[in-house]
Amino acid sequence: MRVLGIETSCDETGVAIYDTARPGADGLLAHAVYSQVALHAEYGGVVPELASRDHVRKLVPLVRQTLAEAMMGVGDLDGVAYTAGPGLVGALLVGAGVARSLAWALDLPAIGVHHMEGHLLAPLMEHDAVLGPPAPPFVALLVSGGHTQLVAVEAIGRYRLLGETLDDAAGEAFDKTAKLMGLPYPGGPQLAALAVQGRPGAYRFSRPMTDRPGLDFSFSGLKTQVMLAWRGSDQSDATRADIARGFEDAVVETLAIKCARALDAAGCEVLVVAGGVGANRRLRATLQEMAARRGGRVCFPPPELCTDNGAMIAFAGALRLAAGQRGDARVHVTPRWDMATLPTLAARDAASS
Image (cartoon, rainbow, N blue to C red; front, side, top):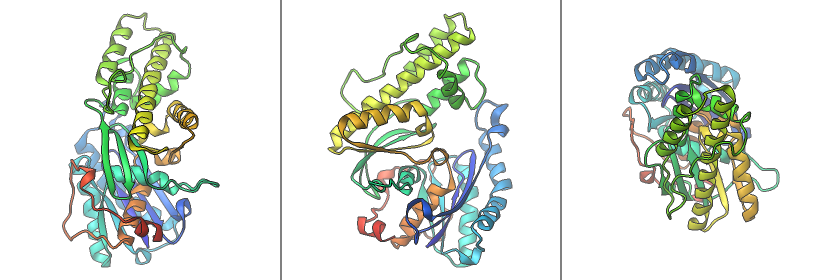
């Protein structure tokens, strides 16, 4: 199946076409992402109404662009997938409305895709030359601006939540910490770049909730520690870099500790990392070292597929459509959606696709 994927859950408009006849990354025929960062920068965060309007403006041109890059017309499509949640309801409705209308006009099957399942499955598009793509069972770390979760993946479509954040997501903590130190929006990547210049150990912050059992996270207290350290400092450029390094080290080490515990709890040695924070270089290096010590494996999507994109939606939707799953004719969006309620996709169905 050649499936058009549409992602509009927040502030990126993503469109892609995935062909199930080709393995892994080769199946991604074309993809394009438009970021609204410049639009929201003056507000210091995403304005939902502006995000929805910008999706309206950009989505159809991006569909045309992606089809042209794949050297296809709409008549060459076999299905349409779109993000149905979780996310900003207005933004979701734009993508869902365009996707369902296109599917109806072309008499194609369509399916709403869980945004986080898209992230979780994105690393499966990568093909290791020796080991091949990761296969269940494995543990997934979903780490982004809106989510920090550890999920046991028993099969595609069969997910068990092991732990999640009790307050701020890791990416949200990055952004808010950057903002309180005066870094421009979006702050997370700015803080990570600044941390490279910081001195290791100049500031050491706590590793939240690692001194007790469990797999849940909490980053709001860490953010407060950074705020107090910043306000009590000379606020020089060098100090800002040192604090950024201390904060990043704390978040990365916390995530690594919890991932090791999750692998023990799930009884497996394969870790899959997805979401925007998964592009962080220090996190990647630390998790690779942790996996190597255990004799295991950690898998990431390419950095350009860590943030929100249509490729992951096209891929996840293609697996479900190829397995015979379909959505009804309603425009379906769910701002809050428990991934455990998703229908199971049998391993043989995924393999045959």
